[in-house]
Length: 266
Figure 1: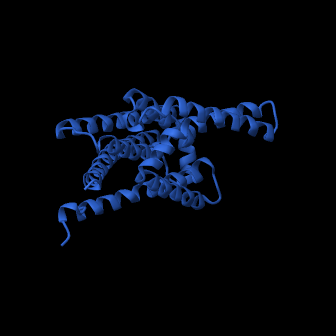
Figure 2: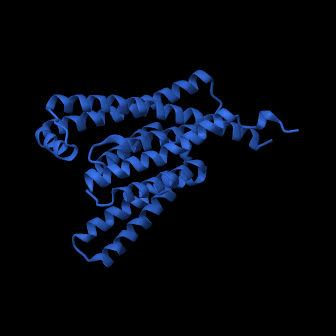
Figure 3: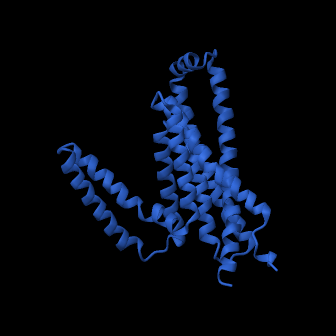
């Protein structure tokens, strides 16, 4: 007879399944927005499809602990040095020489990983470092999306996943655990809020041109007042979604990983 205590509850299974849909949906929305408004592509739905696939890939990355560690702990330094070396060399040399410099930067990054990161567990990293990394990634996301924070929901999910990996094996009281999760969630939400306020200020400075663009694109008679209300409504909804998504991701995956850790040794 099966031991029910070792079986993940149906409620948790449903929650995990729904959570797994968030990454692809967010990716598809981000891709569609990027294709239509930023790249002005003739095939925005193809861009959305590619970003949906990216969302599925991130689901897989989050599911496997070692893969998550490799992608978000081992890859960033080599990847950044690869891009920086290539872009810097391209000002002076051709493509092939620049690629040589890029791979040299990649090798240096791998060396830094071995020296700086190898002795330090990813899930015990200092919170100051995590704060810097999160803000850095948030700025990159906003830059790619021209200030629209929809893709920042990815970061909330990744932060919740990291929380579950960091604390699933730790011995913490329930109050302290919830306090840590609330602190992380509030931080992610504040980062999004500050980003939105900055973006809203930039939009407001160029409101005349943006209103003309929206009028021609949507065929709706926008005014400065309606633009302001649109920014406020979208901003509030985004903040609420970021908070709920980050907190829920952390709690659901914490319960799932805690269950796995308890019974993986029995």
